[in-house]
Image (cartoon, rainbow, N blue to C red; front, top):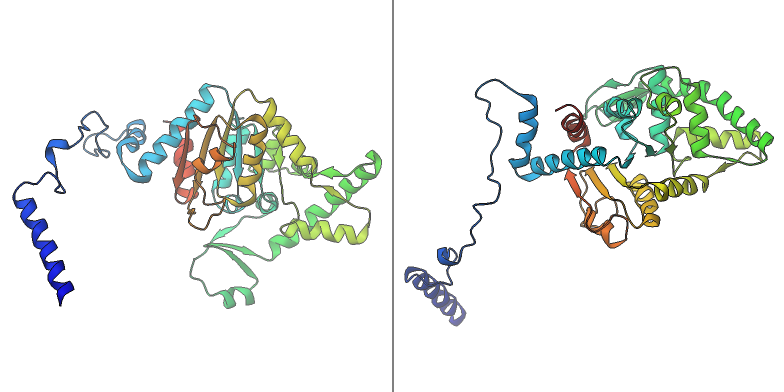
Length: 344
């Protein structure tokens, strides 16, 4: 009872203080900081004729992730203006999705200087060069799809025959890589193997096709983690001395990073590709520009969810580097970044 009385007394005291205009109140007008010079929050005005450049520019005062998107666009523009070497890292689901075509465009037009991806980002580019993926549904029944030979990546469907085609395409190339190993007396690294692969692809919709022709290196820190990894394993069963040098990509990426006068990183997603690319920046005292796009949070201490400030503490990004993390789905955000930086 005494505790209840004390709480009521404290509450009434606070009310009386506010009624008397006590300066300790929540809204202390006299001591309010003047923010009139800050950008005012405002969205796009759809009255009048629509203008794409103006529409993209309006994101800067949108607030929330809209303003982060605008900042990413501006950093991309700065990278281009300063002629920075641009390193693009992405997880395999970017190639599963339509972002493959955005990435292919950047490689074709030489807007990027190096790529880092997982093995899924390699094999799915090959598969799509032969047969397409199709739009399905997020909530499709898993057992029904399994019985019908359909694999699901989110709301994207991939039938089993795509992997049959992958095996038919890849096995002669893997055998060629083995013959080259015997001839040269040393194992190929993933980067060398991927370049051979790009030389065999005939589809101009493939980013690997353009990476080979434009001499843009593609690095894969986890070349065994996928269907392509299975095929490499089967090759080891056929030839016990077959190898793939997993250290070669580290050496090549670090050397490329160190030789860059200015380095900018654009990272779609997290996991091994994010860490692999950022770790290489330590050897040059950090990247000069950084753009992250992912939907992950930092609460569990994961590198995937970490923001750019965490990378600064490790020396992966320079402390004064223009940097931003845009939280959200890269299939929505990344095309807008490219459109805003290159087309608006």
